[in-house]
Length: 540
Image (cartoon, rainbow, N blue to C red; front, side, top):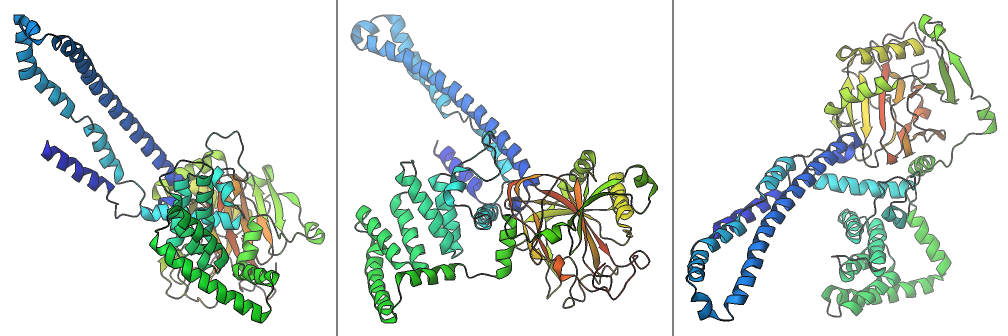
């Protein structure tokens, strides 16, 4: 029995050990779906284990109930009971044989099947980095779309129908975990927000294994780190009413009171009013890059610079790919989304069957998307690009070849020198912050190994609708293009002169709700000499 207990402890320890392999699950919703089926399988296995334990306990219970009645009767007149030879025989038999069988039954391990399945599946589990990545994605969505913690905690996200069955809420433990992850990143702003939410839910009576003292400890320190001494002092005093002997809080109380008195003295000497102090604090919190502000506003649908004059230049029409026979018979619907840079959208340009085939081909090969380091040229992952991608060559499947040909027919550009079709699936809060598709003058070797020149144009398919978020935005010009399944957008990255068009700097907004699939084709300069003639002008 002792050996069995030691073995169980070792097995559980090994199961709790985190895998060293990193799968970046959080960067692709498409691949995360596999985890749901893994979890479903584990739940079925766990239920089988529970049934087996229940059957075992039922047998033990029946044995106990039978003997309970028997011993109750026998102990009323022990000598009279054992005076019957059959009773005496059965007592010997029970104690010598049957109790041994009960012992074997109680010690029988019913968990072997479940533990074996769990051990097998655990190699595919996400790890700490995935959990942290998913948590940071929630914080990113919170900032970009200006969501308060209560909205996220209750699961009432913008764009979500109240009839949907999969709305999920955050517990006190969940909010506390988000605060801790922010704290470990010295992100005291989000630490404060999520610790305050955890405390609010606790105050409202939610059951939790996390106590108010622990939350207040984090909360007071994170607020202090942001310079809010009065609030830090308030939280510290509340902590001490719950735990008067808390050593760190007692030390902090004296320190905060001392610092607060110094601060008030300085403010009095400077004549700083409360209103001016609050403005200074607000300015400090809003002190981040102007481009980031523009990018996030566009993601929220704000700051789009669509003037009446500009809108008059936008139109829809039917195109035939410069009299291509196929499209003369069946023209394609084209919508001008923006004038400068000229961004056009082709409607109903890829079929449902083609999109599913592209996803099917790409999904097993999805890998964390990378960026080219502008200094070293080495491909590496980055926190500002959260997605997974795969590359599909024309020879791999007729659908890919057909898609490439369609791009060539409609743009009039040679795709034989283009990069392979890149398929991307965005993860939790998946995004790609503002970037250029073309190589700038300060990175002359950006596409040197391809030998096909710079990226002259970008073609982008939207292969899914997105319930909320996920727009493609152009911060320099204030343009926003929403994902629309079955459509594609196209723009030139270079002027006819070969100079880069810096107004094409664009970004993929974080996906707030839904699953975003796209595929894109980067078309290069080589092969376009007679298709898009060069010139000195800086526009088409």
